[in-house]
Amino acid sequence: MKRYQGFSAAGILLVAVMFSSQQVAAQILRISEMNTQQVRTLNLQKTVVLIPGGILEEHGPYLPSYTDGYADEAYTRELAKAIVARPGWTVVLFPQIPLGNDPANTIGGKTVFFGSYPVRMATLRAIYMGQ
Image (cartoon, rainbow, N blue to C red; front, side, top):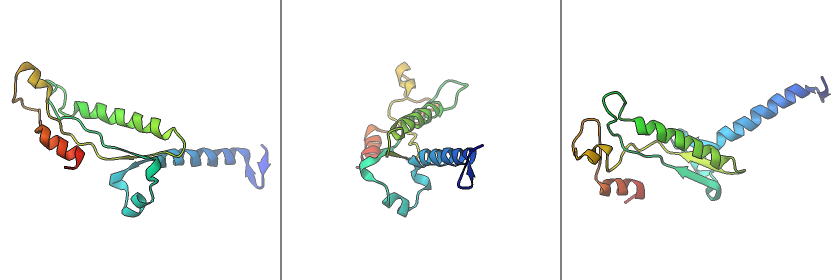
């Protein structure tokens, strides 16, 4: 194995892989794990903030009310990966807001259904728009 100033090629490759994977992982940040200094140092010109959201609603007798939330988490994760694939970009993830206005049970004309937790549109708008 070829050696470079006391390091083997495999050792350098391992360090390079570890460093690059840490860089990618560090580009997707969770706001809930950041302190004020870390927030202050973000490059606002190349930072995208993602705030996933979706209603908690019934999905029949066998699926949890958070079924859509699991899908939203997966979509958000994939979107974040796509954004940070561009050099220099960072994504800051906020926790999911499990609120919505119009649960699927209203399609059947049932305005009250156990397992659905809608809020008024004015409430939802105020949360997302900061009003």
